[in-house]
Length: 187
Image: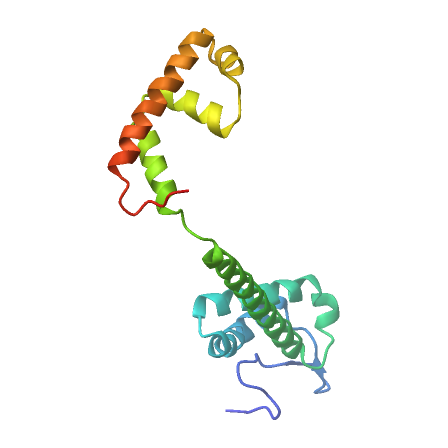
């Protein structure tokens, strides 16, 4: 059994010419099969995720395939693949860090937003109990600042009907809000 000096682990044996000189006849398939496992293992140790390590190694070998005619002439083409894979892993960590910082900033601003006041909750609950046409008239008149004639034109009803809806809506709201006066501030 003959051993070749200088052979690296996971590398296929080099082809020799008649004069004993090493010829660079390695195909990309041979290169891939010889080094994919070791590159993936290194990346798995770095990232802690086998699936992601395989994706990174696959991407690095894909990029190597696109440059294989130049890469095959390098002294150590696997070093190039390894460096590309590590750069891809570092880029992922940077993207994750940036995304995490963005989310943390978003959470801080969301945490500063105050919730609805007890008055607002009581008004919303009371409005929800009104019939739809009364609620629409009250919201359009008091929140959208539309006049009675504008509401009548929008709803396609007479102005007297809108006035009736407003009166009935205000009366119902007053009764509902009087029941809920505990804990509601006078404004």
